[in-house]
Length: 277
View 1 (cartoon, rainbow, N blue to C red):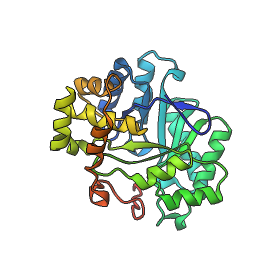
View 2 (cartoon, helix red, strand yellow):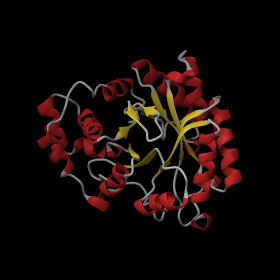
View 3 (tube, rainbow, N blue to C red):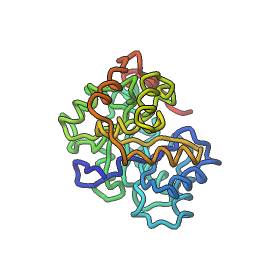
């Protein structure tokens, strides 16, 4: 568990459901909960919030035992829209509260560039207790600096693309100096790094899978990670990363794979403007 700047805590390893079809989500989340995961990451734009809630109830776990994150749909940044969207998320999950709620993307070229008023609505959710913690996703340093200048609360986390080919170190460094935790989405670069000769060699040396090596690298960097898989064996393997360590030289070997912006796989948050129809 890692502590947020608001005093709440989050399991460092979670399970992600991005690109898992709704019909497969309850089964996948159920498998993850059986393995021992107690942190699930979803979003309204993934279309599977309801199935996440269904799986948690089916597992017979108390609501307080599972840390659940969801995110604001890009189409609902205006304050009243954000309020309605958050209520819809709670209704889909059938929860009274979320452990963490995020602005999914800053969308600086949309809504007159005003993500601050959106953030202030999330502050409302935390004050009324319906979101235990609040944060952002895909925010660049200037976006975070603007929130620091214009808003009351500091995000608990910033969920960004990060993996060995794209360490996103500038954003991570800003977070580290301003008490904002980094969550890494696409932690294994959607599988691209798993065939990298350096990663394969390290996996052979330590007797682990390439995915376990990369996830362990993230954990030792201090990242929060939530790998996704619908294969039960891989779901279990991804959970088994706390009984070994990578030495400093090995950490540096993985860090050396960073390609800077050329390693980024997802959209650039400075220009990304997708709004679902």
